[in-house]
Figure 1 (tube, rainbow, N blue to C red):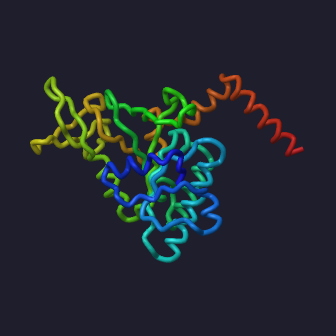
Figure 2 (cartoon, rainbow, N blue to C red):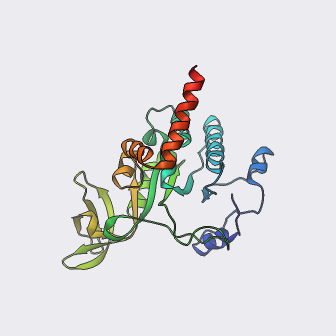
Figure 3 (cartoon, one colour):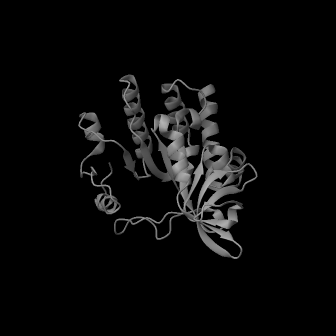
Length: 258
């Protein structure tokens, strides 16, 4: 969905995906008319404005519900969204609803959702660059993009592990060599397998390239992709606009209680 200039289909085909549905149509009208074409995977970078993100998540939740009720395989989804999206109330509601569908407790793990982003210099998250329609968007992306991945069912752990193993480069003995990260250790290091088959444990700044895998909010917070509750509170107190917004919310709640 979300056609924009139609370039996404050409790019996906150049990567080897031959059966891509990317039509210049009103996605929401197709949902209302029950005219969404059959698909195996939903991959999209939706508009970030208005309520597009929530409407997309509502659609995904409904599709997952229908597939589970019919005892059919659910359709995987991969959504490229700003990292702050996962801290919003509407997204946490989406996760909890998805977990309930699967009759599990918890959030990310129960909902079988994980997050990915590019690994940049010193092993840190790297921002994505976006090609905008002429006259739209900013020259430099002001936020970190995050792939929200789910709907893989019993294959979730295998898919997440495969994403973590994407080819990267590790620093060893003064040089960079090709490797594949395969396990995150509790001390912050990552186990990698070199091209000659040997293994090593590397510090974050000794890795570059490939993908970073995150399983929950705490991991995103440690990577500075998401503000903690304490950081949000401090920002609301110090930022004039946030402070005014918070005061208005409190006033509205006060009037409601009277």
